Image 1: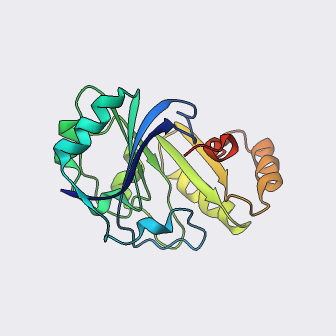
Image 2: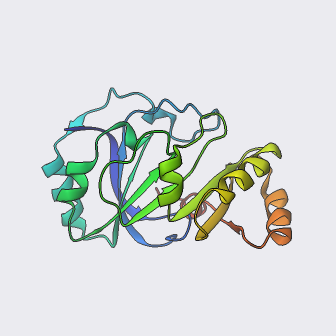
Length: 191
C-alpha cells in the first residue's frame, strides 16, 4: 500500500520527455519544504492508501508511453515492489534525491533543492538534472549540481510566475551546457 495524492493520465509537461503520453502517480509525503512548491497538498501522508496491484491496473488500463512516479517526495517510500510490478512500461522517477534510491528505473529526473541537497549516490544515477530557478542565487547551486552529475541533460526551470524567465534565457545563452525546461502542462492548461 502507498499513500497517493492523485493519479492521472496526461502528457509529461517538463524536461526531456515533455509532450509524451504519461500516467502520473503522485505519492503523498514530503519533508523537503520548498516555499514555492506548487504541489504542497502532497506534503502530508494523510491521503488514501492504494494497493500496488490497483495502481498497476490503472496504469495498464491507459497504456501510456511512460509512468511517472512523483510527489511530494516519492523516495520517502520503498518503491521496489511498485517498479517491479510495472514491467512493460517505462518507469520514470521525479525526485529531489534526499532519500536513498529504491526501485528499478528507466529514467531518473533529479530536481535538487539548495536547502536540502541530494544524496551523492543519486547524483551519479540521474538521467536529467532539473534545477528550479527562483532567485539569482539558484544559478550558483545549479552549477554545483551540474558539475556533480553525468553529462546528460541539464535543465533550468523557472519557478512559475516569479519573473526569472529572462534571467534564465540570458544564462542559457552564455552557458550552452544548459537547456530551459518550461512547465508546458500549465501553458496547455492540462494537469
